[in-house]
Every structure is written in C-alpha cells, then in structure tokens.
Image 1 (cartoon, rainbow, N blue to C red):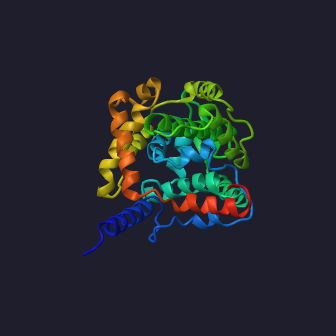
Image 2: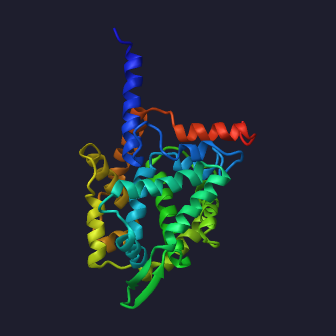
Image 3: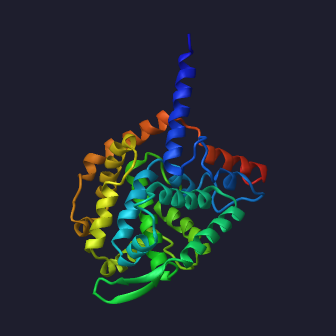
Length: 305
C-alpha cells in the first residue's frame, strides 16, 4: 500500500509544478530564471532577513501584482505603454512571466544577474514610446524610461506589494514599512530612477502628487475590464477573482472611486484571502527552488550562515 506521506508529497510536487507553469511557463517545476538566481559568486541587493526578501517571497504578492496593474492603469502614460507596446491580450501569462522574472532576479539574485536583468528591461524600454492624452486633455509624448513614468510604476508597484503584505500576510516585515520602502528603492537605480521615496511617508506624498495625473477613459475601462476577467485557465479563475477583489479592497478610496467600484469591504475579504493564501502554501509545500538556490549561493560566497 502506498505510504500516505509519499502520496501527499507527490500531490504537493504536482501542484507546485502547475503553479510554476502558470506563472512562468516552465514545465519542469523550476522557473526558467532559476540559474540567474543560483549562479554567481557574489551577494545581491537583499538578504533573507531583509524586508524586500520577506515581502516578495510571500504568496500575498499574488494580490499585490494585480493591485499594481490596477494602479498603473490609472495613469494615461503607463496605460499607453501597455496598450501600444504590450502583448497583454494575446499572451497575458507571457507578460506576467516577464514581470515576475525581473522581480525575482532583482530580489533574490546576485549582483551580476540583477544588472543583466536591468539591462534587459532597459533595452525593452527603449522601444516603448509614443503619445498619450493627459488628464487635462493635452497630447504628450512619452518614453518608458521617462523619470516620471518610472517613478509612477515604481511607487504603484511598491505600495501595492506593501499593502497586500500588510493586509493578507501573517509574516511581519523586518523594520516595518519604512525599511521595505527604503531598501526596495535600490532596485530601480539600475533602471535609471535615481530618486525614489525612502520612507512610507515619502511614498504616500509621492502617490498624492500623482493624483492630478490620474484619469479614467474608455481605454482605461477596457484595460480594467480585461484585468478583471483575463483569459486564464479555468482552474485558476476562481482564485483570480478572489485576488482581484482583495486587490481592489486594499486600494485607497480615491482610487476605488476612479475605477468606479468600491469592492468587497476589506474587513470581510481580509480573513478569507489570508486563509486561502495559507492553504495554497500548504498545498504546494514550503520548498521554494528560488529561495533555496539563493540561500545556497549566499552561503557559498560567505554572505549568509
């Protein structure tokens, strides 16, 4: 008779492979950027006991990623970049994999891989340019590498992952929100953003400074509608709908008003989402090829014990 523990391990591995395949396209259970994290003879930007590592290793990032896309869509400049240069409708998971690759390598990889990944993103940015209409109706030329657009994408990303973790994770952030904001500011320097918020208060000030730039147009509604119902595998659809609602619920009321939806009350959706993310982690297992490889590299080079 088959050992129940072995059956459980096989099920965990099968679920983990499906999860990795959904997010990265991999078929062997390992993300294609695993080598970029495992190899190298130096440390990276972050260590396992630091805020960005803790936040980005948590499953609450599944909510944070959706929230970041919702926020970014509210700025007509970043929206234009997505609509005019992204394959998000034809290959949504492929675009998602590209974002996850940058996040993963930057958080867990060695300095050499982080620089190489920043170079890849910068090369992509050189091809992203065009024109968009501002909230006041003015036509404005843009490039993805424009400092104001880089800053908006950065703060939308940072605020989203921070709030998702605060609301839907049970792990404390070492040093709190200020430490996460301060340390994650290092991640965008190789992308050309030299000045970024260094505390939670500065993050909130920066977000508020963008309020007059945000607008809802027909194009925005089209993207938001797609984000709410993307063409993903049926098995993932129910989970995604909950995560979308959780992302919306964690957004400030002025963003919800722009989107035109208040969403499920945060007090109601918080425990449901937190417990589901816990169950997902248990179902998939505690092992993480990315984290394990990154820690093994850090130990090999003497940066972690």
